[in-house]
Image (cartoon, rainbow, N blue to C red; front, side, top):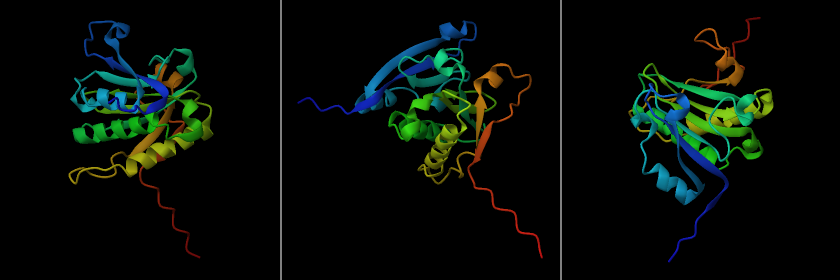
Length: 208
């Protein structure tokens, strides 16, 4: 008996960037699979490595079908990203939890009216500390980007983790526009927006 497949509203493509630095970047990037149903997604996810199992300098990219995971394509050219830096002192579990929580939220269309602003999700595995980022279409649409950022925060602060993991599993979400990332002159980029994992306590009122 054929089981009914639960179709997604949007088809998504999973990309993999290998660690062969001798090759051109475009040649390192390979399309793994495009999935269109919940069942296809889990069949793929359960049969590939998690981000923390990839070699250093490898990337995963999951983007809407038809959008290449590159800054310069039209869908991304005027966009930006919500960035989560994962300290190298964190356990592998933390990276994989963050990746899966956001991936399920994106594929499951959990961003409401702002789904059209989301282009994809990226994991960069790096020796000095890995990164996970959500790419959005328009860096100037601060209202939509803040709504997206707050949903990401909510997903991550409520994510189930084992007792050995220190909470919160992230410190701050930073929103950067792609243009600043491409033309940066130092290692630090000024964030356009930021959301902390722990709400900052209000300053005490001055004594009368």
